[in-house]
Length: 139
View 1: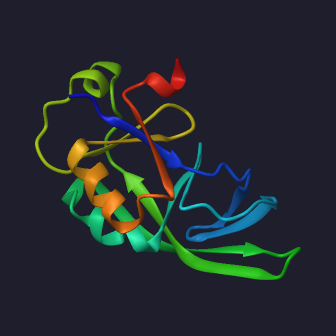
View 2: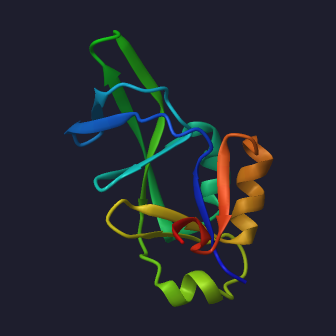
């Protein structure tokens, strides 16, 4: 079974700049999404923490602060996910690993999850994330 590519259902255009080890600043306005990825980060809404921790040592979750200086907003509901393993194309299409699995791929840190982790994430809030099978989103 292939891994699932996961992204925010609503692409808000929000872009962040890292200003410290656990701090980010908004550089391009947009609505906060449940999953934000870029070459420099993978940020996920804190409500998914339990599901993500089911992956064990596959990732490290660290609380971060996002500041929007223009609108005077501070968001403390994000965790930075340091995903330890990069997926290969073969693994994405032919993963046989049982249980929750998470991988990243490419320069934009695209996130891929197993069927088991997809199910856990959907139980938290199935309407806020978008899942596409394997690499079909990129075709």
